[in-house]
Length: 240
Length: 225
Image (cartoon, helix red, strand yellow):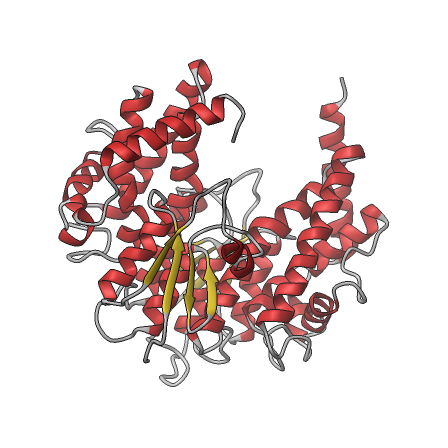
């Protein structure tokens, strides 16, 4: 049963459920947003190799996690969920008040999802020339992100992109910390380099140090061994 | 909020540009329009204003540039708060509108593109996917007059050019992407939305659109784009 405090929530809701999967950054993004806002929710773990009837019912379009279900009504797509959560539970805010700043947050969130995230996934599951290319692209896009953040966010690096308190972009970057560590371990390169991308680095490390982030994080050793197993499988099927 | 200067860099045939123009028109905002010759001849100014993606549309308001059409539309609605309401008010409805706009861009637009740039068996497969995508998109409309309800809204703006463009592509490629079999309600919406005054009077000339689409297809097959 959720207590609605008029000052904090837009209107009363009785039940919040989050369908997610272990080790998924997109699931972590939503978990961290809910925790930051102290929203009480029930977490439902989905096995993506064996999706539940429930999941297929609440997200028939993409059949993916995360899905937030509020009083029986589902919302899918993590960025869409984040904005919904921010509009429903106003405190603390994760979006700026100024419309132009909000536009900048949305632009860069979209950039991270479309340009940075896909590269990182490729890096985890390729070798050889394809890997080199993916690392190059990732590094290039990360540099663009760093430059853009510096230009568009006056208080970036203090210590978050959004300033003294974490905002939407910090939630996205900070929730990726497990994935970022994987990239470093699997490539042998510190792709989020403190000197090369200081603002991104500051966001990730400041966010992952928050108690809520530590709660959400999955044990790294387990994450690593799962990814290694997945890699082996992927490479095995590629052999002639 | 007083506007000092609103300038839009776009292209006459671009769905992404037209979305933004319609948003500006709905709010009654006066703006200067600069047509960009895409993709090969972009102006220095555009590249300076949007160095990250180098794409149109770019809206400049009080000297500050914005890119990404859906981001721009939300900015317009957030900034010019009096007058027409483009986004729904309720957070759940807003979430649904954003979800479907993303679906339209990620699945429908790319499906259309794939259909018009493929041939033979590959095209048949792409066509099936496109028909399914539009069938799914229809769920967002249901039995409503417009995606936004009784009045056009964010999602209508996002999808409107498809109502104009899909029939053109269907003619050029000789396929049917949206019909009474897979998406009858969507097809009816095509007729309704193109009849809305503001839309009707601001569509590009059909023959020009036809020629351009044909040209792009040929350029694609000859490896130019």
